[in-house]
Image (cartoon, rainbow, N blue to C red):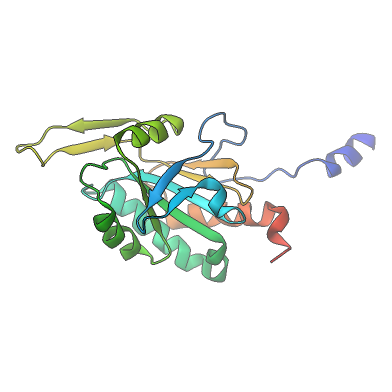
Length: 191
């Protein structure tokens, strides 16, 4: 009986469709500029579920597929989507200028923000989030491709990394896990 009482006082166990990475010692944050020229950190989005995806605008398949799935998830969330911030971090700052990102990312959903840094900032943030990035030469100097890790990270409204969603998941996976994070948040009842 005592064990049942103590269990009721402990944190509730949330079941995610993605991989639960609660307590991870990586992915603690970022300091990058958004496509509007505003410096952003994870703390700027406190109170929202943050969805963080690394990609680049010249990506032929993985990035637009993931961004389209996230856009559909936001539609499916309806009003709950107001408590979610999707962030696209470019792994190709050489080509992905602020202007290009400002056209590309909000085309999926006007609330989405693109983040970028210079080469050193990009290297720091990809290392922090364990994102592998490999530039592959193309047939001409500006025609290279970039291989990169393609999963998506979800942070709870308190700014803690909680879920990793692997590439190729349906919008329903994002909706399920975002709702779970919103409902588990102490601020969920606050509005």
